[in-house]
Length: 374
Image (tube, rainbow, N blue to C red; front, side, top):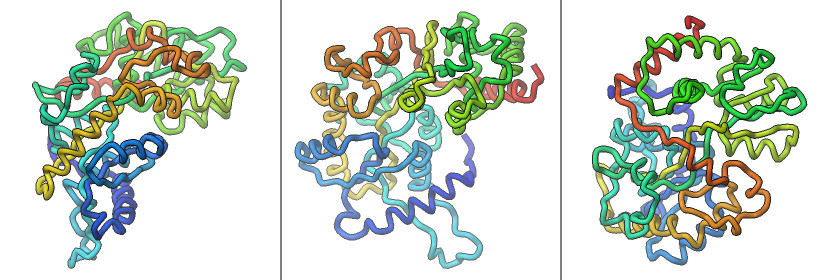
């Protein structure tokens, strides 16, 4: 994959991250760094890990998954100094992390760009061997393991009961005539094309033929239902009733439903795509303390895969864990949610990696759909 330029959003993230780590010099600045998301790890679990490990470390909490990716990129490929900064006074190098959380949809991009190192098998420990084989396979590329899956959710549908009279149950319901112009879809080719494949009775992972007449016809008719393609603004549009139905991600939708009880959240009966967060090892070209970071990595992997901590993590975060959890350990509010039903995991699909040619087919078909050419 060729070198890509920084987006404006990533550039702004870089400035903010530089300011955030500027005060991390001195003795603590040399400690191994773990990157994670705010509200993603309960403070009580972090404190428990500090008591269990012998390795001192720093924890940097960021707001969004996009920031994690920007941090990884700029720690390996910091931006070149601007023309107005010939002395490179404003060029910053973020502290390289020993371990980082990452959204799995960015995993292949990060691997191809050289931002990650594979995990040495000797650091994975015994708990990795007991992980569900589907999760082990999800993190493996060409025989190497690139991360440790941690938590997951699914692509779901939310609709307003005060506007939609007949319940929505599956993907095919999105084509109902009364929903025309009232539907938002993710700005994501694989999500949208994938749900059409599911509507046709296929798999998200089926080979894609961009010239197939039936697929093109279904994509074209779905496009005529759409109010907007957005992965960022679909929740406000749904809350304001600009849209009546939204395809989004289970965690976002359930959090919103808690404050807007008129929303119904549905996981399609035919199955859905699984999103997941993964712990990865950022690339270190010059690792000053490989033994220290290796020990931290092994301790953290063992900790996040420890079954005894799963109930607390799930109850506090409201997000399913990759480790199985006894139904009796769930609070009533989570037992009622469809994403915690065993059938959701059984019917869900983890995306397989795409080749460059396959990715190009998705993008070409996506562009034609968005332009109304199907």
